[in-house]
Image (cartoon, rainbow, N blue to C red):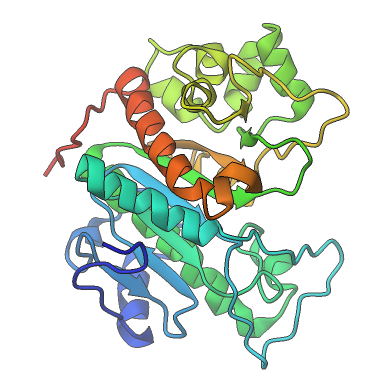
Length: 323
């Protein structure tokens, strides 16, 4: 099966889309488990907003992958973002990487992650920012911003309803010289160093994007989640892909740039989503996002995630739904 195709894929245009989303509530106020999530969403199907600028693939496992910056669609009637601090560079090949990961789970594990993908270019909208800076105040793009984040809300609602919990990954690409994954847990580089050195652990755990899991499972320690044997960074490094933080590379050096996580990670792992935890992944190009690297990384990622679930959560593959 090619990564860009799903059996029975169909489009729901804006009227039906809006009706369902309003039944769930707006992204600012939606609860993690709205009552209406079961009637209209079908596993292994793709759903779109009216312009097909936002897409959600309905999964069958408690993993939601958001891809906010990989889009290439540049509508001529939408001005480029030029407001202060607007970043417009595309995270090349991140959509293709998410598709490869999706197909790896389907092929080798018989499950599918939820995908939420922005197909519109970051020049027009930034789906990893709050609405105003993300749209640069352009009223024409606010509905598109809302559509993407309603899809994330819905994916997390479905995953938590079906499995009791969800892992949220915000997938990005970086252009830094050090070719490694940068895992963002809502902690600065110096705070990641503090974790490795056993400093301020309680305070940093509460600030981190895995705090919801720590609150739900007192058998897991924060430091082990970050740099222990079964932290995701360590697990993916064991599969041949360098990552920071990990047991092998616990924190960035002071002269090394590092992405700590953005709006999506902060929002969807917050106390408003108590059954969700996760992190941002900034992927290097060479060996990960490039053509040769994508299938290898996808296989390693899927294996590491399955190991992560087996060792850090109460969930066990094959993720039988609760219902």
